Length: 381
Image (tube, rainbow, N blue to C red; front, side, top):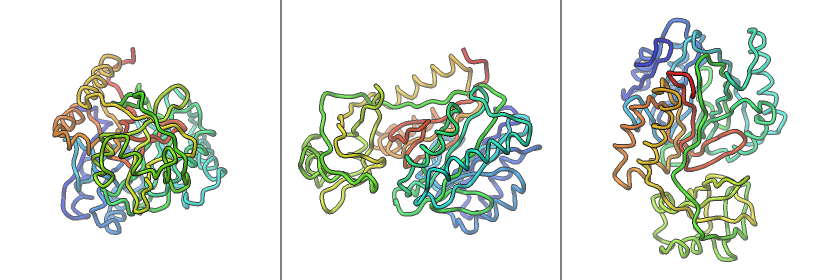
């Protein structure tokens, strides 16, 4: 069990009112400082938002919608989950950044400055060893890269991480939660000064192969690739992975991702869908001239086990892991019939989070990763 100042909870109640009461009962505690919630788009958000606001009162409560929840019992869909931290565990301040589809850089830096000032008013100074920034963002805005750039330039070297809100597999509307309402076209930045050792991480189970392709036509603002190797993008990608273009599905994309090399490291650039004109829509912006490398798998379960074994050796059993897990990892685990095993591993390590439309780390918007923050029960070694 986590210490009294750290609580995890979830609810699968069918109505917004019941779910709000159950999650509040599980997370309420004396001197409540921070509540972070992740909830299914299946709830009536117009009812759920005010109910949560009334129940949690003056506490700092942030959250977003999901493409699946990671709860104290592992993966679920159609639920609400979250964690709370008491004032003995942390200090937290949060700021909504609205209208991010038309964001200007100064708006992002102003939000970061506002949070630093508010901590200063409480007599605290954010420092990298004891402070992190948590970003929740509308997963359909397609502006994660710009928002991250604006915030990171002001907060660096404070660790910054987060996830893009989801909408199941519908890809229609996503929301962040702040002050009793679910907001579209918005990001939510939270600065947390915490009193326990933590580590920010990015884990992926793919490695680069020798198979490469060049993006020769793209619309980065829409995250659409129109041409690969001077051929229609969808058919050419399908040819390279040995499939018929008509067979391309989210499961196929999950099984055959591509990577880009940035600063010596390879990062996944996941494909979201095919389009009628033969183009491909990605979860991240892709520019013309980018070299894409086909990735190969490591076993997703062994990769997850290895990660937690290493973290336990370094930091003790996790008291809480804030987990941002790309929705394609869930799709892959389900297609390989190992999702129940992954679910158990996540539950055993106190992971609370959600299946995302993208993950954020420092100034990078990434895909197909398990990214997050681990709060350990011991002293880091």
